[in-house]
Every structure is written in structure tokens, then in C-alpha cells.
Image (cartoon, rainbow, N blue to C red; front, side, top):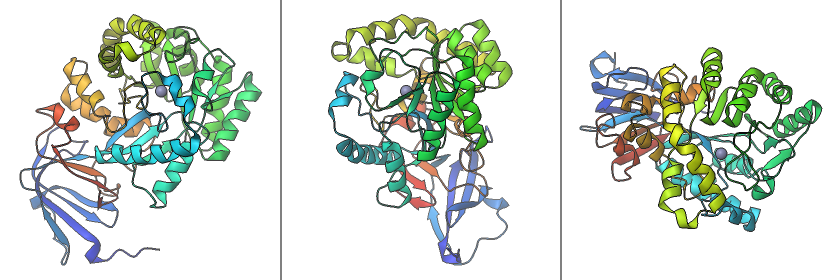
Length: 405
Ligand SMILES: [Zn+2]
């Protein structure tokens, strides 16, 4: 057991604090860290007593934000132009590579990630390595393998899917992931873009099959995320009780309404389309074509979802084509650049709202007493220029558990 001594207290002072819960930045703020947790965060003159013999870090002119959260990554995919190449890399090497790429992610200010689909349990291994201090990386919520019905296309990501047909098989697949260490579960509610056989608009697992997975997760307090492009698949997943809809690319009025009513979180993955276009000659034509077909309506759908009060949580699909780990903040910038969310809401999508989406809001997402001391110091106000978040030179320091990375 660790005993917290006064020597382990750190006082960060004189900065502007964007704490994630108060929409307005707090000037002349300070943050007191005791061990790994936050003891105080707020106006300097509201801190009763400065503990004796605590380390003081002067952050004059700097901006402090909560550690960022990415709700949708694939930690063992590397970002090849043709995702099929992922199959050609051996698992042992992928594990090492994933560990390094998680370090890049952490250095970019992302102190928590949710890995929604991994090959052969690599996410569990990398998570354990980070927790045991062997490598540096963000907190990881891991899904293990994605639960999918038997369909064409899963061969594109060998080892990433567990095939299950019928409620009993879905229940078993969920139990297997939970046994192996899953913190949450992921299902395929529709076809995908990233494999040749996938039909994004077509529903896949049925409502009762998804419900079987959701109920297994609920027993252990673990939520379920659903990959869903088409409207019917979204509706099936929401009815079945999933917590987050991933992508939501082809949501119609009815799908958005049921999400709003159920309070389901939406994790759009939008900025990857910019990367598709920037590297169009290296992306397999079938992927490019499917991506382009959906892109035009996507902006309007996400804007509408936000206007209907559907909570938008930030996810990048990092690991997919040219979507490299460590460039995660591009998605937040994309939201603002395309007028989808205001800078305040875009930042919230990767902090407070993201934490709620992944059921971690009691631990992370805002800078408040009792939470993990995960934060980022910036040299500019990200609410005035959101690109600050994606600029490595503007990131002055990243802290996780009160420790500087
Ligand atoms: Zn994904």
C-alpha cells in the first residue's frame, strides 16, 4: 500500500484552467495533486492552505485541460494504406509496435483510450504492460475481439472477430471476451467499409443477438459498443441496449430519434475521410468508393444529431488507413473546422462527454477533486484555436496519474 506523504503533493499554479465541467476558463487557477489524484482544482485564492513542503510548478501563461480521451481506436492496426496488409504482420511484432504507438498516443495528450477491436488479445497484453509500468501508454479500456455474425469480409482483419450466430453463441462469445479481460464489448450491427464484402447499410447481428451480448456485459458493469452505419442496424443496437453507436454514418430521422430518446452516445469517426482523399491512390478502390458514397450526407447527420441533443463522443478509428496513432486530435479539429461542433463542445467530446460515454466519468474527463491527475499543459488557449490540440509544439507537458510523461 502506498502512503501519501506531503512530499508527494504537487501544486501547479498561475495557469488558466479549462476544467472540463465549467464552460468558462478559470484564470489565476491552481491544481493540487496528492499522489495520483487531484485534491483541489480551481481559483488560486480559493485554495484554503498551501500544504508545506509540496513541489510547486509555475505554469504562468499556460492552459491546463483534462487528459484527452479517444473512444474508438484499434491499437494493433498500424495505418497501412491497404488494411489487408495488417494480416501480414506477425502478432509478436504487432504487440511491440502497438506498445510504441500507445506511447505516441499518450505523448499527444491522450491519457485514456477505448480499444474497440483487437487481434488475438493484443489489447489485453499492451494494457497489462502499461499497468505494470513496462511501457508508457494511456489508460486502456479493451474490448478484445469484435463479436460478428458469419459474413463476408471478416477475413480482412484476421484474428479480430469472433463469429457468433444466434443468441446462445453471442452470449458465449461475450463471456469469452470478458473471461479474457474485456472491459467492454463490441458488436457488428451492420456491415463495414473497410472490407470488400461489407455492406455498410445492411444490418448484421439481430436485435436479440445484440441484446444477449449487452446483458452479459451488464452483469459485470461493462457496456457494449456497436459498429453501425445503416439506420436499421442503429435501431436494432439501440433497442438492444448498447451504450455507444460507432460511426452512425447513414442514420435517418428514426434512428436519431431513438438514440436521442435512449440517451445513446454517438461516436462519429469523421476525419479519416480526409485521409482517404489525401492518399486516394493508395486506398483500395472498393473502400474509397464506399467511403465517398457516405461522406456527403455524413456532415448533415452529425450536425443534426448534435442539435437533437445526442451526446457526441470523440473517436478516431485510429489504426485504419493513414490514421496513425498519436494524430488523434485531428478529429477534434475536424469537428470545429467543418462547423459540426463549437470549440467548447468539440473539447467536451474528447473529455467530459467521452468519459461519460465509456463509463469512466467518476475517474477522468474533468479536473475535479478525487479524479486521476491526468492533464495536459498547452501554450495557447485551445478554445481560441482548436488546432493547438493537434500541434505537438503547443503541447508543453502531459501528466498521467500525477506523473509527467
Ligand atoms: Zn473501428
